[in-house]
Image (tube, rainbow, N blue to C red; front, side, top):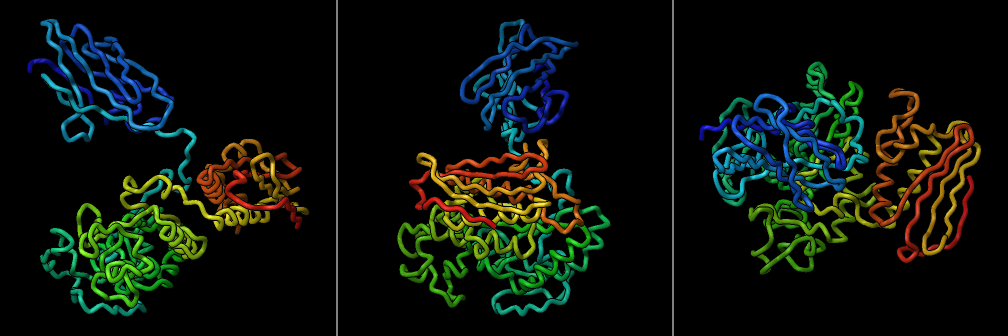
Length: 478
């Protein structure tokens, strides 16, 4: 094909912005083309729209277009009309990875993609511009640990420089995952000065919990660090030591599936519990989907060593999210700054947000009261009111403290509000805690807002539908 065509979705000259864009914003798109009578940009999301591109420089065509106001995936490719009457379609490469496109003589081309995100959504401030260092625990560094490995069925190399065994795992697919080098949490702690000198802000740990494999994505017990890697106490000690040098530690949350060799499934009977594979009376039986019990079950991508979990199961959700005792809050309280979600695209939205639970509502109230105590300087009165208004139950936490400035009030529930007095003030920042409160209330179908006057105090209130709860009008003053 003798025509010159070029659009690179990863280059800001050809697309501004080149990455994800806020829903409702504008995007400028350019195409290099040296032989065309006209060029049309074909787009669609909820509907198909076509835009005529204009020649603005030698062989450059461009158009600025408004993006849909709803978050989602926005698609586009180009229609090039030539002088000889031919029409060429120019779109994404067949691998759909973006970047430099390719011309199609016939047929429907692959489309370029723009991810549209909610402009009101704010990521945690600590991640903005942070240098995140990923560690595969088994292969990073070994140091003495108080843990005692009680597994007898795995091969642990005696020398760090030994070659891999090269033995595949038939149940885990083609991967070589059954030999270990013995990297430990204490080893990571020893290297904190090295990581600090590199400018690392956040350590992202691949899974650290009990498992059969060296990658540990086949979780055996969400409540215990793998004894070859360390102890629960050593994890907390790592987080505390990292915090002292300005580094946070983030865990890997593998919540889509467990290992077949686990407390919960227990295919091989290595654990003292009655696993789902062992009997239908197991408390974990309903966590999984069996097509024909017990051998035929739903597994992640068909890999039998990874039985898939039912994320909609109430008992599993409680196990994961119950305040303090649930897996997610338990390890946050142990020192983790948060979770990276494995295969997040395969987790249902209601699981990622937070499932409904009356204990979570109590946790919201606890967080609101604690925030007032920590941040409402000069406060002499703190009131919790619960009352009905039509078909809604309204919860109010009010104080007569210093109040919140108007510019901060706008981002109160986004997770971006900094703590008063800086990092060494001894106070916890209120922003992240209140953003979690807002997520919980939203998951319950309610709303949360705040009003404040500097020097007079702050009132934070949220409401829920009364058909979901039973209560009487109440007021408690502290």
